[in-house]
Structure formats: structure tokens, C-alpha cells
Length: 249
Ligand code: SF4
Image (cartoon, rainbow, N blue to C red):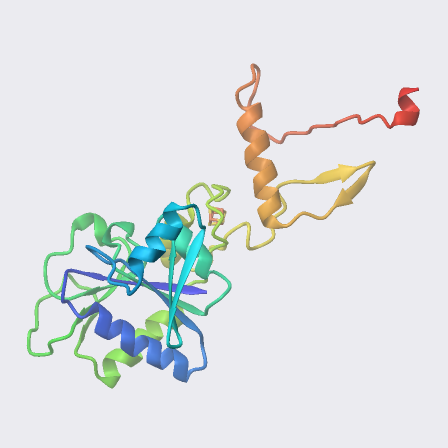
């Protein structure tokens, strides 16, 4: 999955660009999902009922009306939403969430905060007549074919989004790692690469562990062991001698 963020201030053309990119992805027969940050209240029919169901303890409320469904559920923020999209789409557009500073196209005019320039891929101006000097970055004007082809090329060049575990095996979190991948396209998430970080054997026979289970073991054991006196960085080996009933007799 590739992830592209469309950031910018209000009414800067983010949604218009997202719409056009979705239509192109669909034409290419790619599946596309969008995460949009909405300021203010969600305007959903039946929202009150949905919120009541969540308050009562439901994990998710699906509000259905004439072939469309609103889904209300509690989330743990942007990473949680990205994780939900992983594996289910080819392209994920994130509209808004400026502070996340993911690889992005900055839409509209206005000063781009310095700390948000790190992952800047291009600037997009919906209004072609309003040519503003950029800071040396690629500037795209209006929603014409040239602009959309340029954005397609940007999407093509994006690295795959990492495994989404936020496990820290790469020395940072998944968003931080994805930002680094933009500068160094050869980098690959160690979890995705199938790098084995945990080995579990029972009676000398190795069991196969998914990256997620490896991460679970690693973080649980590390969290416990690093508190012990004498702990130092390195590989950890634990052998549990489990006696059968017969052996105990
Ligand atoms: S190793 Fe991969 S899954 Fe873990 S935090 Fe880094 S990028 Fe994310």
C-alpha cells in the first residue's frame, strides 16, 4: 500500500485533488481508501443513535441508509486508521492531519511551517492564475491532465507503507520510518522483510511465528527483562523447563 497525504489549510483544494486521484486509481483498477480529518462535528444521519450504541459499549456502529453505510467506532488516532487500511487498498490518501508530516502534497497558498517541509513532495494550487513562488519544490497548478500525471508519477515513486506495527524494530515508529524511506528508497521495514527477531522452540522444534506475534513476544519480554538488575542490550534467551505430570512423579 502506498500512502500520500494531502495537507493544507481550509478550502485549499485538498478534497478536489483527492476526488480526482480516487477516480484515476479506480480507472487503473486499483483500490483506494481515504482518511479525512474533519474539524467540528461529524454530520451523519443517525449519528446520535450511533454514539448511543458506542456509549453503551458497542465496538462499532454501522449506520445504513439506502446502500450507504456510516461506520462509527472509537479509534486510537491516525496510525490506528492507517493500520485498518493496510492490506485492503493499493492507495491510501490522508486528507488533513497536517501535524503528522507524512509524505505529502501541500495544497493551496500559505506559508508551510518549517517542521512540516520535511516530507514535502510538491505543492498544488487549484487556482492556476495564482502563481506563487515556491521554495524550490515542484509546483502544480489546476486540476488538468499535466497535474494529475505528475501526481501519478509521485504516487508511483512512493515506497510501500511499512508493516504498521509501530514496534520500534527500525529505531523509530512507522510514520518516522516512512518519512525516511522517501529520502532513501532502498530502505525496507524489517518486519515486512521478514527479518526474524524472535525464535521460539519447544523441545528443540522451532515454531513458526508471524511478524505480529514476534513483535508481541519481543516487546513483552524486553519490557520485563530490561527492568532486571544486570540487564544489558543484546539478544535474550529464555529456556522454560516444563515438567510433564509423569516427570513430576
Ligand atoms: S520495524 Fe516496521 S513495523 Fe516496526 S516500527 Fe519500524 S516501520 Fe513500523
